Image (tube, rainbow over all chains, first blue to last red; front, side, top):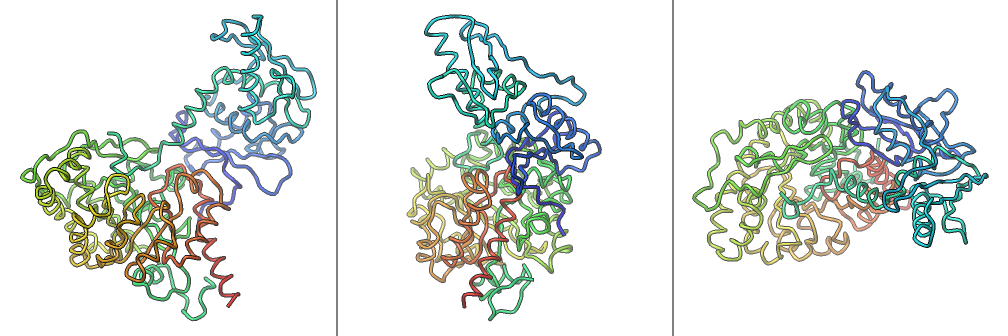
Length: 214
Length: 351
């Protein structure tokens, strides 16, 4: 009798899409498939909602280097079946920040870092290996490189390379430049992301009057 | 069709909930929501978003019905918030958006002394109480034969926080017990009026949140200030009452069990087995699936574990511990009735 369907495990939710009538949009991980496949879904039945979802899924392919499944434009995955659910969540959240019709281009593997006042470069060493370097030199720059690499690893769910604190290794030896470029922007200040996530998680949780702050 | 206790004929949701409230045999443990299972996704599904779904009866009823039609609970509870009554009493409300709960602006209290307390003549015709009454009528007509329709009226301790401010009200309770009791006695009229109006609108049972919560108020406080009032509510509101108090409440469960209320909606901070040992057969327990850590942040497997823990302890009705976070995943909520059915089947097979 219900209208809700089994979509798999929801791994992320944007409760209000500011670019389309405040609808909620979820990212669902399909179950029973070997590789990570995620579905962009909304229960909203508003006219235009499906087009909005299609835009977000498409934006995920550009921003995160993901690919749509044949015949299923709302289901995307990383190349070679890379199992990066944390990264998929981040790509989804970034895609939802874009308004439909906006031109989506992948982020470069370089950015200016205000904290170190230096250009940051991420070199793709091939086979899923990336190395963060700063234009600046010295011990502080090396520490900052390692910090940024750690940020990319945290936001992607990938690992750091043993003995190389500024190197990140994506799974399946699969390089995904667009993903690393996207995460690089946020990796400069991971604490801000954590705060953002904590604020989002606490929103919509009802407190007893004695615990409310207004 | 449920495959439940072989000794009890198959029941519908309403029969199941009403029997459990009386601690009578059931075909299976009912899945009960005494507070709210509204989520942003369900709001989208039926196009009934907050805050409008707290102000317009048709939207309120439509969103509430999803608790049954989509999630498979044995009851429907349309009063999602804890502010409807306070709004009608004159409190200022921060209505928020779709993804957040409306709250009372308690830093702008409307009453200071017992003499200030007046139940406005339009208390039951105010938009935010009328909406509840009309939503109950709609739901009763549409689903009243299938599931229990549960209403909500706020207790005087909660109204004290809302209308007088948390800090001033608590300080008054320390400094002047007589004055505090007078305030509670005057505010209880709102509780009773709104409760009875919901009975007349067709509610089968009523939740009565009274936030004498474990973090700020002791069990002794409950006994001193609230036990008698709660006994009075159980006498005057002629349908089963489900008392709701958040937090650790083991130190007051003995007193709560003495009130004559039908059920106590208890928090996950209390162990199911210890809780049932305290209340014995004097009051039903409903709960206590954890909201922030389990329903919101974990998956169906963990939800199932908590359901089973309650069932194994003999809890009469299973459900979330409180109003669920608005971003809770639907699959976690659907897991509650699924787990109850599976457990019932396993028990039957084992006998």
